[in-house]
Length: 140
Image 1 (tube, rainbow, N blue to C red):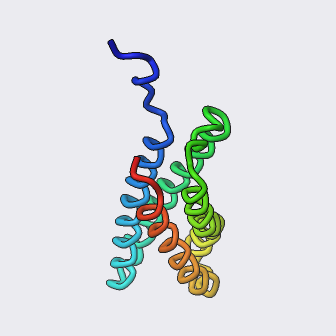
Image 2 (cartoon, rainbow, N blue to C red):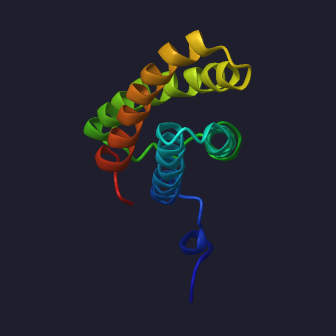
């Protein structure tokens, strides 16, 4: 007989796995956007960036809703090493989340000067988010 606890889908490892999949998926979209930029397909670059921003914000806000309102103790199972890895990951992902709207709006409004210095800074933070999120957080 299967118990209710065994049926629970919203567990820490499952949430981490879903977020890893989301990070990889939006990174593919970001890379496609950068290819469009190199090929001077600016309209597609903007469209892909819009999809990237929307999906990333859905993931970030969804995670915040889960850990704030649904289950604040979702990641209590982390040991001290994993808490350190999470802190390093947050050191990249929080600046990425703060830079994302600023970069998106500067590109949308054609503020090229802002966009040119925000872009590389965002890519640096996103690279750290990707590497620490995919390779340093637990696999479930």
